[in-house]
Image (cartoon, rainbow, N blue to C red):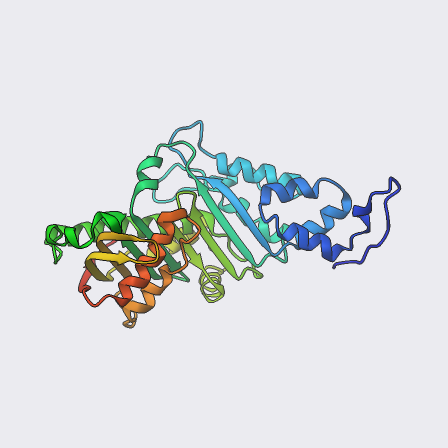
Length: 350
């Protein structure tokens, strides 16, 4: 409970005269969990106020196959929560296996959020690729963005990709003749593979980086520092997800397997394709632009526009290329030149 404080410290520190509501407002602007942990260790008053934060941003590292980097996310989380005085689970119980992998997951430690941040409403996890083993330059320079939505199972995964992007002055119309007006069979196969990779990436984040049974959470976003993919879960998706995974007796490994089963297919993939797409707001144009939207085949048909709208505003904070993705999604829906294809993914994870 927030208390009003108007006292001045013995050393004349006017900061002590600020009421708790103002302190909470200040701390809510911090959002980063590491910084909040340091703030909570300053004094008893901060230790009481910080857990009332409703929005937290948590940077973590992608797992590396090397033994030196393995478990770095777990160790950082344990260190953070230890500063809050939280009793942590032993290191052996935090080791889990996903699809016969030996990676260490921070899943159990993420679950400690509900014990320390009872008022938490929004959680944003940013995955950092500090090892460079995944090819940072290649990822940052790629023209592929995806956004996936999960509840108790896959809701949708939307992928936007392009072959190239250039200034309009370079001549959008001059390149039309050299760009194929339709997609070939190999192009469609490549789109399916890109979509499958995005789904597997999203499922990896769902398995390892989404805490369970935090009743107050209303939003979870797991993104990456390259600004290329986002796993998003809103209030309805979290309620569905927690409802399906809260059965008594389920072990952590069973719950992870349950999360992966929604990707076993078959999946329906609708594709839009435009040979050349002008982006007037940014003065650029994209060539060979595709938007692919994957849903479970047994789900009801959803308008392609509804899925494409999920990309709008999703990557605008990712620099010029992120803004180009946002604009491309808008212009794609307006374009009268787009062609539509319907594909299927029989077994995504097999």
